[in-house]
Image 1 (cartoon, rainbow, N blue to C red):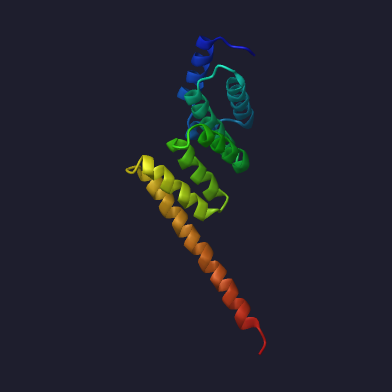
Image 2: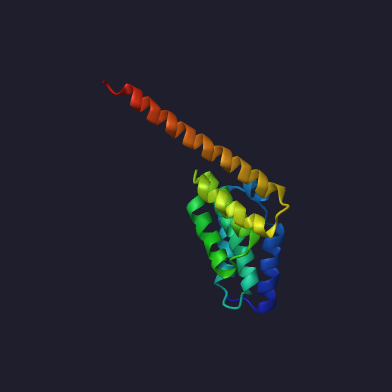
Amino acid sequence: MKLDSETLNQESSRILQHGYYEKYLRLTPEERTQQILAIQELLAEKHQLTSRQAELLVELGNLYFTEQDCTKALASYDQVLKIKPDYYYALFFRGTALDDLERYEQAVAYYDQALKFKPDDHDAWNNRRIALVKLQWQKFTQAVTIFLQIISFKR
C-alpha cells in the first residue's frame, strides 16, 4: 500500500497515540496481529520520517513483547537503536525484554543506559533494582548447586 506523506503521517500518529503496553495486553491475538501488520506496512513506506520509524519500531517491539516473543521484540528495539542510539524507550524496553529472558546482567546494563537519558525515571530504577535482585538470586542458586555437588563427592 502506497501512502502520500500526509496520510502516512496521520496513520503513524493514530497508531502511536493509541498504542501503549497495557492496551496491547487487552487486545486479542488477532487484534495484535492486525496492529503488527499495520505498523509493518507503515514502516515499509519509503518516505517515513526516521524519528517516526523509531517510534513505530518501539511500538512493534512492545506488541511482540505482549505476545511473549522477546526475540522479535529485541530485534525491533535493536533496529531503533541503530537509528537513534540514545532513544530512551528502546533502551528501557530492551532491558525489560532481556529481564524476561533472564539475561539480568544485560538488562541492568540497558536500564543504566536508559537512566543516562532520564535519571529521574522511577520505573527504570525499579526495574533495575528488580533485575539486580534476580541476578543475585541466580548467582546464589548457582552457588548452592555447586556446593551440593561438592558435598556429594565421595572422599
